[in-house]
Amino acid sequence: MDERKKSIDDLLADLGVLEEAPLGVGLKETGKEAQEKGPKEVLEEFLVGLLLRLDPAHHLEVRQEGSLLKAEVKGGDLGRFIGKEGRTLKAVEYLAGVVLAKHFGNAYRVVLDAAGYRKRQEERIRRLAEEAARLVVQTQEPLHLPPMRPSERRIVHMLLKNHPQVTTESQGEGEERHVVVYPRDQAPPGAPGAA
Image (cartoon, rainbow, N blue to C red; front, side, top):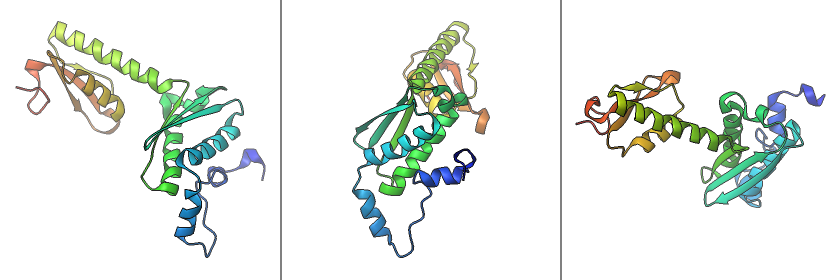
């Protein structure tokens, strides 16, 4: 089959994600084979295989900090790898977690970044939270921030948790869930810091 016409299942099987164990091979044997390689090596093998298929100019750095594996992709056209609003990056991170779980259970967690994208996003959220707090203190009016993913909302909540003049609360459902920054004395009942 032509490389360009492979389905996603074929690609994932080539990378070891959808491999089926041969008949007669027990789980213990499969687990034993996986234990020959450490989590860092399994992660590197998966990500390098994927990156070579996407753009040979990409390269990878992986660090292990206990049960956390931090991988950063560099070089090549990283815009395509990151995807719109980081969706492709998150999807590959999820798949990398599936690969590790297949070999080691839930013992390890993966954080994947590309050219510092996540760090820049976190800094953008921090600036947004600080500006929101400043505006709420100045106007004494609640401020609704745009919808955010759970990890982004968590950054806002943690950053403003001990702010003396404002408090935060998440509102909405699903894709519309967002943070509202309130003056501390106007916080709705049940919000952190409410009187």
